[in-house]
Image 1 (tube, rainbow, N blue to C red):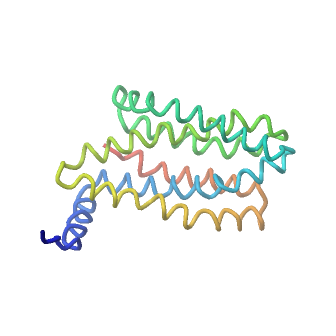
Image 2 (spheres, one colour):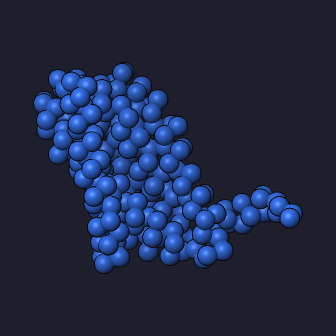
Image 3 (cartoon, rainbow, N blue to C red):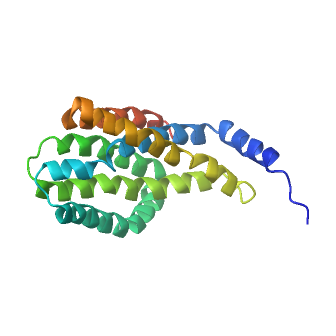
Length: 196
């Protein structure tokens, strides 16, 4: 069995994305969303530790946030179907703006539990709506290929976010870093406003 060349298929999938205004806007919005969340997601345990949490307590914050976020992923998809993809994405972006700002207002690790839950809800609302938009704008023939292109934002966000977030926290402090994350999330909301 002859294996087809992948390059023409990849090119066609990129063309599909570039010809579709909604997919371009979604890519831009998700790229900013991914980068902003990755700026702090993996270094925030250090912030929680700085508030006096033990290693176990730090893990507990993330476990509880993860459980709630997982439990609300299915309702997130249902809400996306009921109220529209754009609404859920905008709600998730608003949560992504507010959450990092609220991190600067607390002085005890226990308050990070509800705040981290709210922060993780951004994923519960964003991802199902985002996947549905991609599905709405693709066919069975190109859906997986376009999905893989659209999902490039996540490893790029991780690659760029972790070290830059660490640098910001080291050189500017936690408060400024959280303000930067909120600002990047706010800018990322602009393309989402124009989604159809």
